[in-house]
Image (cartoon, rainbow, N blue to C red; front, side):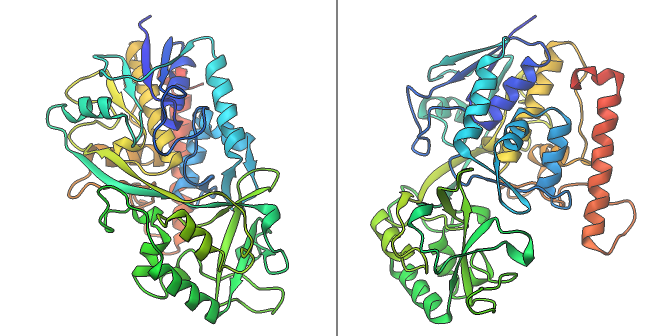
Length: 437
């Protein structure tokens, strides 16, 4: 049996290594931490969540919720870890990030067919490899990738939100409630109109940290810095992460003018993430401006928000729908660098790449997950998107539409989800896909 190599122990790399090993393929997983870290990484464990601790919606009528369920059905390690380490987050799936990382680190390191090596890779393997080094790939390897014939590389900027100590919050002002009465998994900091307007003005004038190459426009829309959002208009935040809709302030019995939501970072509830507050403000400015939020006047900031550059491949025409290089069969890419955006999407690309390389080494035919599934539709987008290729989250616009017209959106999405899960079940039941069980 030939061996496989996976470079990078993020979500995509760990998922890829797991899928290879569970199919009996001896695999070497190479990770440069803890010998070397990127600017965004700080934890020595595998599958580090560097931005939010939320894997977003867990509902089947949401495309990323469907993607999660497909991955569960296909034996995803990342989904097993997420379900085992989840923290309350309403209809979303959020995790205790340290427990999540430890779960995956232990599972991968303890697998008898996975050998872990800690080193920086500077040369691309010629075959039987999956490159999952992420959007902050080290300079030496990034230069090797950029030199591949016919490849374009593109950049965008990503940001992380601050985390505050739970015990430092003023609970006389903060109230616990999820939107529309869906439990009480979030903390809410309500704002009056005057407080919101003062906060808005402070954001506009706050001093920002310099980020090399950032001009203010090259941001991923799904992870936009709060100050960039404010610069687009006074009410943009109030219709975005600070929308008050579905909340009732128990002190007034009314909907607040605006609200900042906090989501638990860990199961103990000792740390909270400012939802939607990605930022590149200087740290002192974050303390000054965000302390204007009611309930956060004396907040202890356990981590300040940061911004970093992300690099991704121009994958259409370079990768196929299994994330394999078209010009170099046997070499695959996975994770955010392929142009998928999001934790779950990155893991799904690692799953597809791992399954595909394993089947190739086992002499089995490749599997097309088709555009009827979320996992397949995302892979097909990466391989075949036309026009201006940009990072993409899972969404129902990528999945083949229903055969019949359904006006009600939730019913339509439910039908698409049911169809997708039937496709996954058919694959698992196919004798030619015995490796799926």
